[in-house]
Image (cartoon, rainbow, N blue to C red; front, side, top):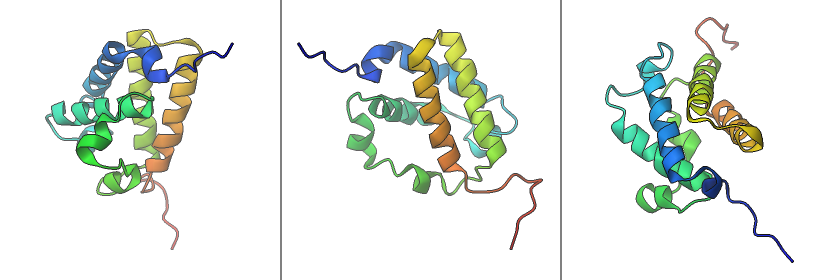
Length: 133
């Protein structure tokens, strides 16, 4: 007998995922390292993130249907994403995961995937790093 694979989106569920993202952006809005690269009104950003994370976790392809291929690196190029900002983003997400009660193997695997994604988005050194030419 074959077991149906567990789809991460089904494991977290839409309600908890959306709550996670809302809490996450409430933290981003207050974070002095992140606030400069985000709009004052984060409602559209959160809506797109909900679409993306739904798809990223194996749910319906609602992001691609509305916006086309995610092209994460290209879409983030206009913003100065430093290692420090990537870390701040991850800290906000970790805190949001704590608040919604995400734990165990699911959280570990999901968070590690987000770590890889955040590091992939880095396109600029920290302000205090020396740029080699």
